[in-house]
Length: 433
Ligand SMILES: Cc1ncc(COP(=O)(O)O)c(C=O)c1O
Image (cartoon, rainbow, N blue to C red):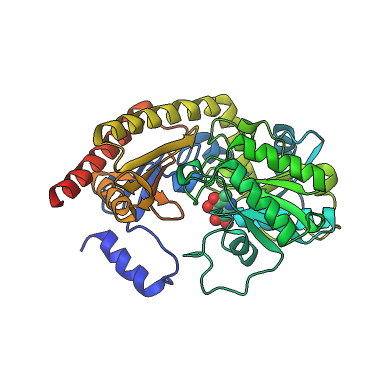
């Protein structure tokens, strides 16, 4: 029995089945390559779901963490603060344009940042309501689930969920939902379900992650900003997946020119160490009373040391430009592929920067998703040595998230493997038809 199948057997016995996952067991990883316990090598187009944007074990990140570990690993910021936490907050405050002075707070996971952004918005406005959007993903806690716009596997059976959370339609041109139609839905919600004066915040991913790498049209974000300003509602940009240079800007909302009030960050923030943050307008961030925010591990010194190194690497290695370059290469390859295999199967190629995806459909029809085809391509790619991830409310989208530090040769190798996998699977499908 090879080691990974042995680990798979142990996993079945020891780990709750609710934790989904691939059958890959990592032994070693470097930049955009991963070796499993059986010695198989993979090109990694997932970066641990947009976490190791600076690659697995970037030398600068590793050195910063090792140096911090020599000094102390945990004091709890509430007990004894440290300069690394402060420096990180100062840097994030300077990077985000909200149109005013900013303040920040460090936390541990993405959903914890989302929870805290909502707490801050409610404290600042004195209002309970939060409006999220169809297909959104904001995490797996009770509030995260309530904000998430997809029932399976995230919400089913876990209720009752917290109240005062509403969902408005999300504009999706590929699925025939225009910006105007989505805005009409939002305006209906604000007359039929909750008064705008009772809404604390709109929360939106400028590029939906789990929902299918749907790029929110700038016109929609502008319209949200306009409604938010009109009604005293705050705009929270959930940048947990799309932030940290992934889309070619530090924050993905920058593409739209819209200024958010608060942003949530995690994943790519600390290059593989658990850290998240809320950054936003200082007047709002200071609304909760002392002691109302924080957490035992929030802003762990090893993680903030990693994050400060990540920010250095993003700047020194020009990772925003790199993200654009990688995204262009991926999109070109996929668009060519779609032209060759026909748009019958690859219905859409989309994304921003190095957050790229393609949607698989039947007979070129957006209304007919092809989740089985999607799963087959992911499995075939894995057999050939490329790790891919699916996403999408209909599980028919393949998302590409290579490290922004990926070498061109490895990127090309990964693209080649992906093309071979698509060709092989579509060839089998055609033969069977
Ligand atoms: C946009 C967005 N928000 C929140 C989360 C939750 O982050 P975490 O899994 O770290 O709690 C995710 C995770 O994928 C996400 O993509």
